[in-house]
Structure formats: C-alpha cells, structure tokens
Length: 178
Image 1 (cartoon, one colour):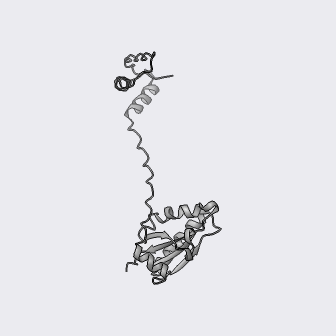
Image 2 (cartoon, one colour):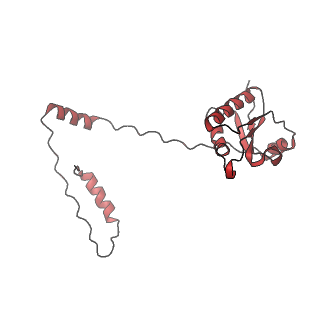
Image 3 (cartoon, helix red, strand yellow):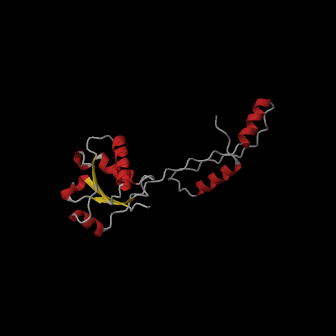
C-alpha cells in the first residue's frame, strides 16, 4: 500500500517537475492532492507503535569507507641510492605463491620486524601475476596504507629491473623512534 505524500514532499516534487522539459505531445502528470492527516489509531498497541515510530530518532548512517591513501613515492635521490646499492636493502620478502590473506599478514609482520631492527629500506617481491596484472602487486600499496603501517612506511616505488622490476617494490621505512 502506498502512503500518501506529505505536504513538503508534494511541494518538493512540484519544484522538481517544473524543471523538466516534456517530450512533444506529452502532458505533465497531475500533482497528488495533499492528504489530510490521519487520526491516531484507538488501539493501545497501534497507538504505542505509532508514537514510537514518530519519536524514534533517525538511525545514524554508517560512516562511508574512506578510500585508502597510497603511501608516497620514495624521494628520487633515496631511490637512486637504493638502486645503486649505496643504501642497503636490509631485507627481502617474496610473496609468490601466497594468497591475499597470507601475503598481507606476512608483509605486515615483515615490515614491523624490519622497522624494529632499524632497517631503512626493504624489497617486497610480489611478482607480476598473469598478464602483468597480479593481485598481490595491485593490493600491496593498499596494504601499506593500513593505519597500523602508516607510522613506519615512508614511501614505496617500483623496483629497478635488477631487483625485480614491475614485480617488486622498494619500501622506504621511517627512522625508528627511541
């Protein structure tokens, strides 16, 4: 059963309908007449539910999921030092053959351990995947944007060809606070 439109809904609909250009040969539909308010029901159960329905505050909307912010790219000078071997790659992790859940967990624990050990740069090998569009390769930047890792990840960049190229990332870690 359709409920009758409230007066404010009718005026809003009239404002919207006034902005629409009709196709040739069409006539605008008639606006529904505002309905008279209905008296409350005499039954105690129906009356109680009606007052609860009108008195209940609207439910809070769920907070929209915030899009992840990819970590910044590594500064060009620092990346150049890593590529040339002047800044040591303190650790490597190979995520080949792992599913997404295990890969994320392994990456998370690896980065926390490396940061705790004072590492400043690590290499994460994800592989290219089939057709060059691997799931781990796509998801790794999202995982690095995790709030638990933001305090330790300074940036990431695609690895140089001799370190794995498109199938690997350099991850720069922030200095360990004392």
